[in-house]
Length: 37
Length: 370
Image (cartoon, rainbow over all chains, first blue to last red; front, side, top):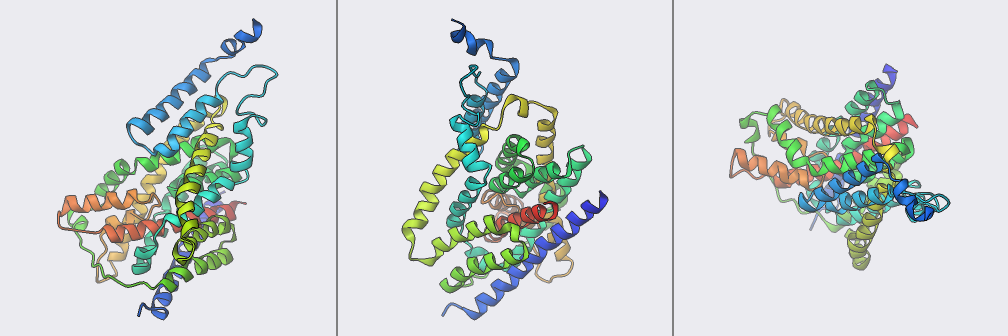
């Protein structure tokens, strides 16, 4: 059962961070490519 | 005569206790202004549900009764939480987040409470799916809590919803205590630079579409919630659907909230609510909010070890999803430490990131335990 906890912490928190880091780069790219003129 | 007395004869102590609990929720909603849009309908729904049932006539909360029909049509198939997200999406302005995307990190860090609470709940004797449903109270986001509880622990829907909405309204009391325990006054005084970055309309339109696609590919379980949230936001930002945007923000939000509240109340039967588990869930809900806040604050402090421009650690705490209450709390605390400090925009940005983070974290829990 400890494996489930580890999975939840590592994959759960890890993937949440991973997805939001992807969004961070997405925003950076979008704001640069479609800059307000 | 027998029929006339059936109601009085059918009344038990536990039902009277549920009337009192319903009354307390209504009192908190009206007198204390604690999430009145949800707690008042939930309280009244709880009273309705526990009225005695005359044998042979379906009770209001039975499957044939009106609340039962609403429950099957709107909660158990996840329709109401999904519709609420269209309304929330139409209400959210992502501009502060698009101006300060680094705040997204706090939206992830402040979900720590979800995972810690799952562990605590499991250790207290709940099975892993019940524990997961309880942990999601830490999403600080009612519809996400309802969404996950509906999948994993329908029988705990009442106490989980009450805990989620109660603690969301108690954010101004919970967060300052945790933040002050984890930060020094000097840390709370840290000023953060705010640059007025212009965000084009194109970015605001592409963002919800791109987020839906990325989240849908990496965390497919999130599609219902993130997809409807972003659909609502696209309606808002596209500029050609003002009427629909207004309808989503007003009529849809009001109508679904009204039905959602009273229908959740219908799950609060005395048998399901008056037990030891409910007390544990209320306690664990508090644990979730404490660890969420701590996760955000400590992550900001960790980042400060590596960056030149320091983050005010309190902004990390705004990464929970209780929007916009948490951002307001952070600004108030910043002002308390230094009356000329202004971190509201950063806190709002982290708070909006928390909305996205909580959905992703909830979806990950669903994916890992399904």
